Length: 223
Ligand code: HEC
Image (cartoon, rainbow, N blue to C red):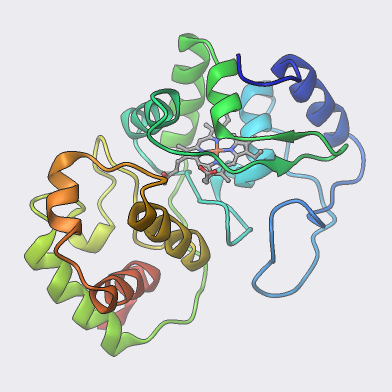
């Protein structure tokens, strides 16, 4: 266990905090609309899921632009993404939970039993993928769609909108989060599967910007 704080204590703190006032201040970066949210995430009756939703938002629909939405991913994709943390393929960012305790995805994953993993994965796979409204440049997104189609190598179908069985949905994800993950791929903080890396490494910085625009548009660049 990497954490100096036992995860059970972290969860207990966070669940206790759920019954009190919840504020996003200092929790997870800037909100895009500048509002502050003072409401607690909805309780689902499932303690495990409530822990995830503290960061990922109600039903895994993130209202925080630097935290990914996960509601609507397939269960298997979520299990695969857990593995990327478990195998150290990805460095997790620590965030302060209400009460001030910091934790991150690596600690979260290490605190889950296999049964817990199936429980949370099943829950999020039953939720609807609901992209937030984000401004985008339709021409750049259209260019991104062309580049994406040439290079995606039979993954990330339909401009990243398809909830593929082993991949995250990328279309309609928050811009800030996508930009940060592309940077992590660029600087090696996040490792890619070999098949993806071969294609990714052919992209210029301009290609990447166009592909991010495609994803942010959630397919709406065609309308
Ligand atoms: C402390 C806040 C926090 C908690 C609690 C948390 N997550 Fe995360 N999660 C993040 C952040 C931030 C990222 C992305 C950046 C990173 O890896 O640090 C992430 C990434 C993920 C990803 C990968 C998404 C993608 O597109 O690659 C999945 C899946 C995920 N979380 C599921 C869960 C589940 C399920 C739970 C509950 C068991 C949970 N998370 C609890 C903050 C959190």
